[in-house]
Image 1 (cartoon, rainbow, N blue to C red):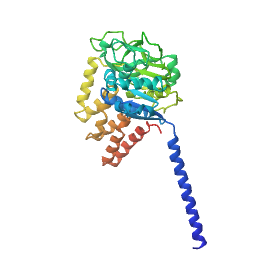
Image 2: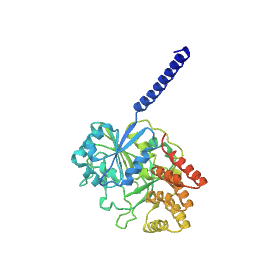
Image 3: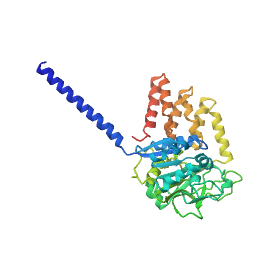
Length: 384
């Protein structure tokens, strides 16, 4: 073997060693990255879209890794690998029944003994309360009242931050009023017999009683977001639904960082958009009729579809998240393109695959480009 061959062989070996070292270092760095590990309770009694919305909202923060967790997995030790556990919307009563007494005790120990954190959203906030004659975990120092009128209504409601809340959500500190989706969340007050005490981060500023049997004045000036130190751990209760409120979904990963005692980081400006909302929208019978009309018009002419889609988003319809993404498969490109734009506006990142499929099946090159622009905007919502 001549010298030239030997030299080339040594150079090749050196290059391979360098490449191997770089790859090994990258893999090691990825493995050593410290993520905040979050489990979202999933299964019976839980609103499927509430789980999906939480999982997707947490993707905004690249420092958080979230997964669905069932009651069976909790019994098999799933909590041991988590930093934060989230109860989503649905039915707090059924969620706790699904956990059973042993599963409930594991959640309590997760907070009190392991020093971890739990967040309850809407029905999940019910589950964390200390409410007489109602299944609850006694982890928030709050008590749910007027449960007999739980079906009080829904809509885009007003809230304001307390001084403490402004520390955690400085992006909203200069706003007297902000807005969030609400769907029959609990009316909270301090639990009479609790040995803990919650701190209010936000106060409800809407009086929701659109259902005839619900009394007026129950939700106004009640706690909207609270945080509680419980032995070694923390809990947070959110009465509304930030996870499905476009422009406000970042509040979910922020709360994960708050309760897990992690550094608060800033999120992209095109995600933090409280300015999207200008007024309260409560779904009275008249508003519900308008929503149903718009839904029906999604099956009519192209012009009616285009108007209905815009109306659904503008009225902050709760079910818009279900109705808009399927329109990406409409026969008319104008409808498909508007659907893609509204998917971005609603921050429905789970629909990335739907837009990708629409691009794949689009025959007109210019149309492909227009859809690809929206796809990039949607992907940019997810944390890098």
